[in-house]
Image (cartoon, rainbow, N blue to C red):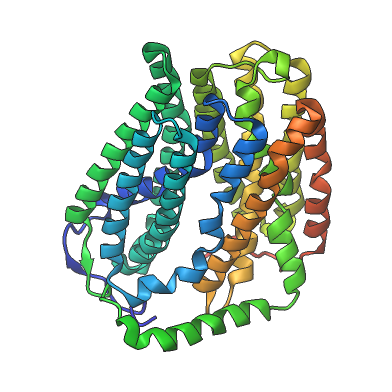
Length: 435
């Protein structure tokens, strides 16, 4: 905590944050999208059932669920800068490991083991990178570069879910082997990540506030403080409603997300749309994610203008009503990529709008003296709310088929709406006031 209070984070290295902020948050986004999204497409193209791929990849959320539990390690040992660089090299090695496992006879089991390593490294990198950002920049620059880091993270998502999926499809057509195509993709991303790690080893500044942790000598005190932080979070007024909202607001999306790509890839005779891997990269990974980003920007602007309380219900509607697009696609099964891309853009734009309400509510919940730690706990429950429904979503779709499953997703909005009605939001929270 004394680190964060440093008056100015000046130190060695490039003085301009442009030298490292965009690349740092691009590096933060790549492993997350690989583990959470690219793995679903990979296993679908390798022939796994929806039941298996949803179950296996949903468990990969676990490191982000329990991330707050090991976050004190970054305070105890080494500097944030050392953690960032070391974890980036580890993530690069894990990406290369996935590339090496895919051509083997036990590709699924071996790659899943490496994905687990990558997931824990990525969640740990999130902790270190966010902490480093706070130490390396004065508060004025932190605010100025919030948009830059968010844009870099989104570009990583679009590049991963769009560009890499498209590349895997094109390489599969060229090589005649899906496993070899994905192996080349992961090998290329691994090389890119090694280059990013080398760049950050040179370009990251060395702020005076980023001091080496005290090690085991301070462990007992830090553990006591850690449990005190958790205790204060669970003593918040209305904690049952808070947790219910954090866990259930995205209850429909948690199930839909795992089946969106399989639905696009499955052949028409199985109820899917029969798109190629390249087409999925364009429609969902590029058009869809761009719409998601724009929706998030608009949602933030709306809240800044009218406040979260007034914007809440319109944003909730924007979150859930566009899920009708998937039901309409499943019923009509259009062949036009333009129509499919347009429907996905509508759904993703609405999701981006509605998700801003969730993010702002987490900020509200975290308000107080320990806001950083409490916000991290909120993100753990956010990840848990995505993980658990995802575990059964593939099995449910396999039992019902796509049309009834998407109907169920619409019905699953009820718990989200109920919890939204129960939360309390102060007037004008989130609204910018005139200076």
